[in-house]
Image (cartoon, rainbow, N blue to C red; front, side):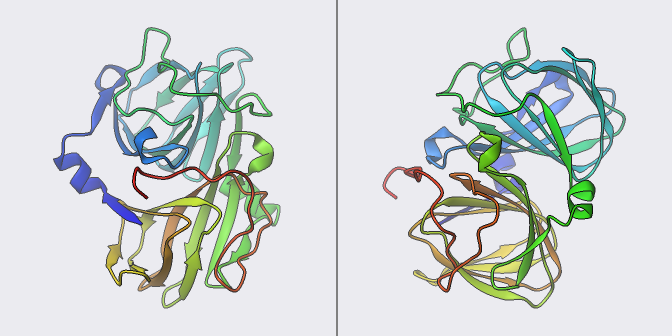
Length: 275
């Protein structure tokens, strides 16, 4: 189990400036971490107008805050970017991102990035591994629409609710979930068959490694990462909102068993060296 924070990573100088200074990205998880994906905290400035093309990756972007516009340059289809929107782009999806306000995004790549990549002239990153097959061209989902369809479900013995916005059926190799946990709730979890990263967007709590007894404050900008060896416990002091990323991807309807485990859904990435 390991923890990283936005402030610590910025102090280490890992923040990258992209898109002619209009985008800043802090990559929390990279290929060397062996979790099967890259996760980044991305901030876009107002007035950005960038053409991008993930020729060698699938990328999923969850909008935390801000507004803008996303356009598929092949079909001309466009979407308004707003909080709770998840957009997914792949190797066939040349697209344009325009920002009206500052935008905060959680970005997840598969295959994972090495960590130091810069966009080339086409707005692409160099290859970093086998590309998942995918099942759809560029697509968008929103929290609002999925909740209206009744897709939010109880999780972790009722201690939280989860909206699994990407699942195994999407063919991207990861699951991304919008998770809420009410103040005062607790749970014990053990992901024997997966790696999971949890990024705190709002609220405060604690997470504890039940093997070592070490614990950390859960607050915005904190990411904790758990794998098959990591029995852990969560406690929410206030209402918590977090983004959860699983690899391998979940089927989507799994329930936690008595150990706080979700059933196996594919090969488990190796994790960090020496794990």
